[in-house]
Amino acid sequence: LLTNQTVVEFLSIPSWARRITMLFDAVSSSGTSEWLIQLGDSGGFETTGYVSGGTRLSSTTTATVTSTAGYILPSNVATNSLAGAVTVNHMTGNTWIAQGSVGGPTTMNLITSGSKTTSAALDRIRLTTGNGTDTFDAGTLNISYAP
Image (cartoon, rainbow, N blue to C red; front, side):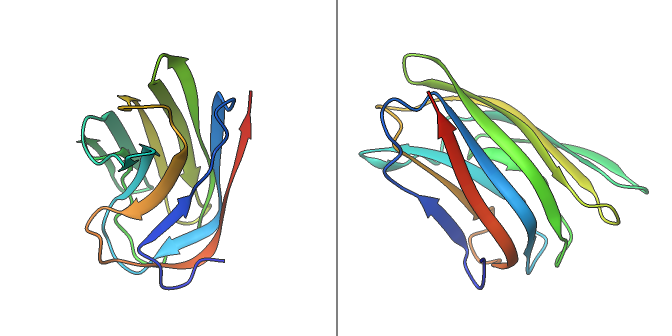
């Protein structure tokens, strides 16, 4: 359960994992900052070098954004309640490809895709707010992984 956290980290992902899925259930944040999914290795989380684009779709607007700081989910509404999944697939070497979406029936849909080459073997993943000060204030976040 998410309460007053600016970041949610999942550590110790096994080396055999080739597909990691981040699962969102009624996740919301306190502010309007974009959400970022970041990968990491034994040296820590990597906050640069992503090639990522995201689209925010709602009944009134469509916006497209890019990020080099993480796979971007362009949320801009506080207290949204979003569910869905983003999957990160192993491509080759230390390169990972992401795609997925989260949305809500009365709010918006957020779509992301991109690539990232980590400096070493991936062993961690996290969700954070883009400004580092907004907090996740509701919902559940989990991951699953497969060979």
